[in-house]
Amino acid sequence: MIRESPRTGSLMAAPPHKFEAGTPPIVEAIGLGAAIDYVNSIGKERMPPNEHDLLTYAQERLREINSLRLIGTARNKARSSR
Image (cartoon, rainbow, N blue to C red; front, side):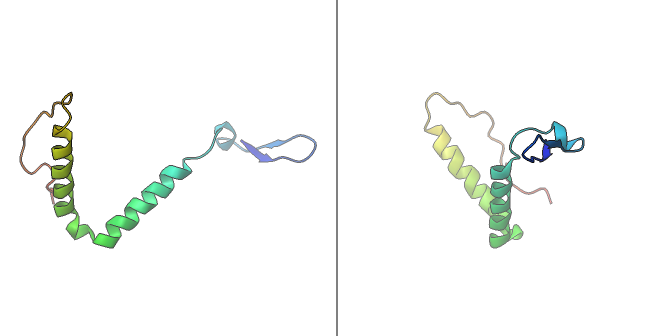
């Protein structure tokens, strides 16, 4: 919102920045960067098997929650459509 803040007042930024109050989503950007680094480290070609393992693990853990009901039993939910 503020471009400069000298001792005697402040200079507003130009639109649209002067209307954007608050802190930018820095944590989200760092998390996205970490996720991209992870995908690049294991290789995109290995993602479908990892997705399947993650889906299987998540479903097993979720089935342990009595108050939760999983709907749908479609095969290959995590399969890549490429």
